[in-house]
Image 1 (cartoon, rainbow, N blue to C red):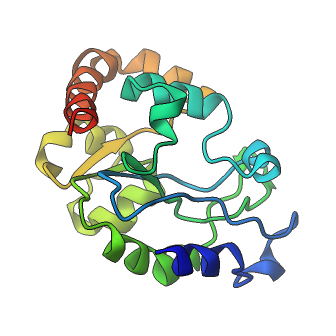
Image 2 (image 1 turned 30 degrees about the vertical axis):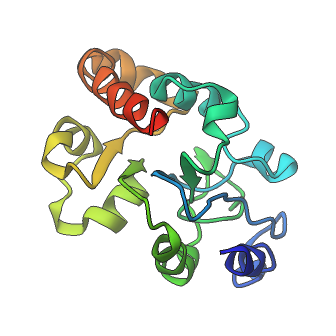
Image 3 (image 1 turned 90 degrees about the vertical axis):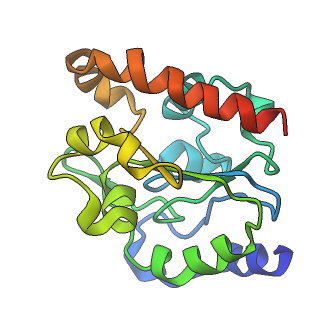
Length: 191
């Protein structure tokens, strides 16, 4: 797996589309039990090179019920974005993840994860890519229907502070789904 991760770090596949240059950010080991598939690194993560090293990451770790050390333990979590580099800023937030990364790198990465037991699909891009026609018409409906994708997948909204309104409108998410998620993650921590 070390060779593959090294290849990803050197990837320049979409360099001409990235206003801030390439800096592929992801982490995994052959022992990872949970894959976290999100959108793409934001500007802070682009600078630090540390996945989910921002406010969204703080909320995600809270949802998972894990410490920073547990979150960055690659034997527990593989962190694999849909786009490995910061795509730049758009009118209403970051641009979508570049479409080249997932088709090129996800299958090779996932083939190394021999102990993978759960994949968290964070946000619409990951859900549409992995669930395809099984996804509901909206992110809200897909997340509400989370039990239908078990045991392989668990869809989540993006933990961005931009989604505070969504969280207020959907209290069931933190009342129902988060406790179920934390119970699953706790079981993986003890293995």
